[in-house]
Image (cartoon, rainbow, N blue to C red; front, side):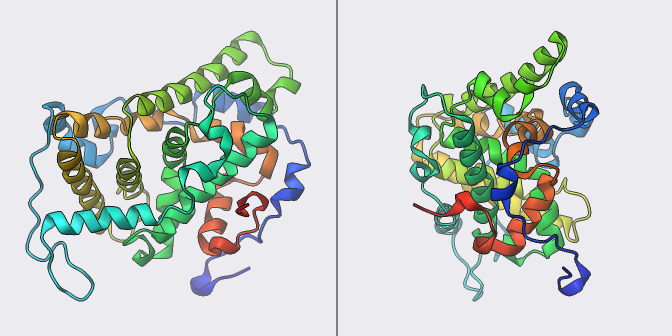
Length: 324
């Protein structure tokens, strides 16, 4: 199928069909996941996201100085300038309203941290969270105004980070045994060192979720964090890098203003929240794909699903998306 502008769109995927199939990734693919051949290290300063490099020093001192918007920087589409506080409050409200599901609608299992979920429930919850991330992005301010190629590039780069944030927000149970079963690894022979390596990836995922939960991040903070993650100029091929950077800075400013007003007795809270973001990239997107989506989509690349979700919106043919 060809869209306007020459973009090729894969046919809508009937995931209900793939859910009935068992698919094992080739051994070399699993090896690359286990040993991290495809995930570049972010430990060096030069490999960190640009927004973190610019603000790292100020954050580590406990607070960033308030961002001073230039005249007209924060304005409605009709050109009426707003003061920074009222604009940012409205911006956060729009981020929250863009959420397609309340946290409780992800599934009752999310509200029961000690509940061990079955394989099908894990896949269903993961499907909801992935769809939620894409649908949220489609409805937040400024993102729909970007060129479609930029939208796709941003989501392809950041979907796994958004997934981790959603997993933490809904307190997704992350028990090792059902995760291994969902990935299909219980049915394939693996050497002890490879099992340990894969479980180490699961541990990293669990740690990132638990560290976010330990901060007791509220819904507004999660929305701001997701916007900061999404509007990254690190995505390849962006048509207007400076504009995307400005959107990230707006989101960062909104988070800072919100934390300052809502948590005045926690002067280091903004810095702690911001410094959680770089470590989200330690969770391999390929590991997330192997753990949660192989049973659903088989050989279909997750990036293809994300593109189709973005272009199809609520009409995307995903069986788990119907609200009960």
